[in-house]
Image (cartoon, rainbow, N blue to C red; front, side, top):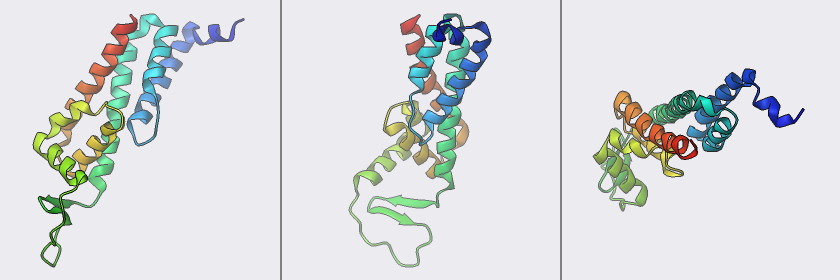
Length: 163
């Protein structure tokens, strides 16, 4: 028996979908991962499972992004001022600090709000967007919806590309 045929056995469908969910969740946290490769593998072995695979990958990746959001929210709140980042309730007047790239990016997320999380799927910046949204205390529900929309669209493109 070919070892690959074992993975395509009908009883393995649920295990493959569960693995896809876990891979999607983990790849959306601060851990590195490639959920797209797992999705494509599941689709190659079980082409009839495109819709469940799409939904589970989107759900897992969105929940992973929300985990990063909550990790950002757990950080101490700070104020981002035009002169830089300063802690809340500082006793002394803030010193002028040049507005660096980090503060400028935070200001952009603050300006765009939760729709910025439409790009939460993007490599390198996605995790930072999710953590920043939590750190800025953006409301979680719109953040989750925009995040799911962007991540779902990315997976949908992959599913339809191989279908």
